[in-house]
Amino acid sequence: MATDYDAPRRGDVDELNEDSIEELKARRAEAQSGSIDVDETELAESLELPGADLSSMSGEELTVRVLPKQNDEFTCSSCFLVHHRSRLARERKGQLICRDCA
Image (tube, one colour):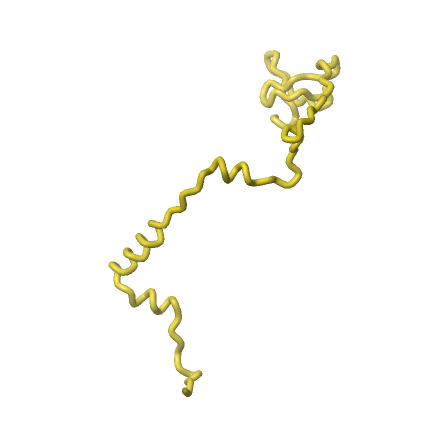
């Protein structure tokens, strides 16, 4: 079979332009009607994130030493994180704001 390579080609765009509105609506409805019944809890339990802390699954306990706030530290009244005094941006009406929140 001979092929005329100089003849204009019909692409997907040409076919879509020639379709009727009813056909396009029917195609859209068919594409949207497909739904997948997935149990989100089963999906979440089967996923393992890279670098995730799995110590609770292996029976290990984390031990963290918590220190009280030091004299040269303050708690930001916006983000509520404890920062060193060098990170203090401003103080208004007793509210201390860190540089990140300012």
